[in-house]
Image (cartoon, rainbow, N blue to C red):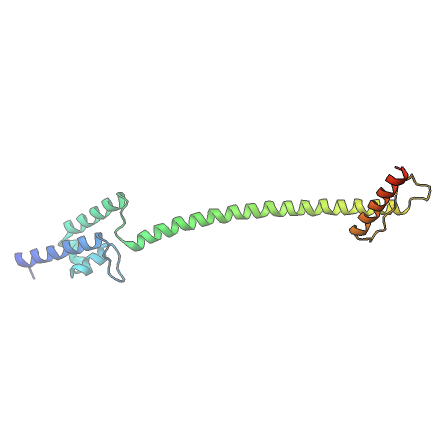
Length: 170
């Protein structure tokens, strides 16, 4: 059935109004800024949009491309997808840096444990060496008991220093 000029004009106004709404970001629920939603919003079939109103479909696609090229995103969901992808990329980079830092910290931790173990071995060796010193050891050498707390050792050293100052023995 052929459309009267009045019906054609009315349909074209509906299509143009739908184009303007979609490009302004007024996307209906379940829709997108695409030809399918344009046809639904204008109240015509997609086939009719392609066959009869192809010039308006082309105008819609051209205006949508121009808006995207200008940095505008008519469809808020697409804009959100772009933002989320960028955010995801930033988080992925941050995660990679964190993994690198963690590996470096693990290496430093292992090195610190090795140094502590070596120092502990040296301390144990020196304690064993001190415990085997003969009574004829040089003056001023006091063997340390292996499990004596540090405060008691410091008190002994202070007493020995004060005694050596009074007696003049160094």
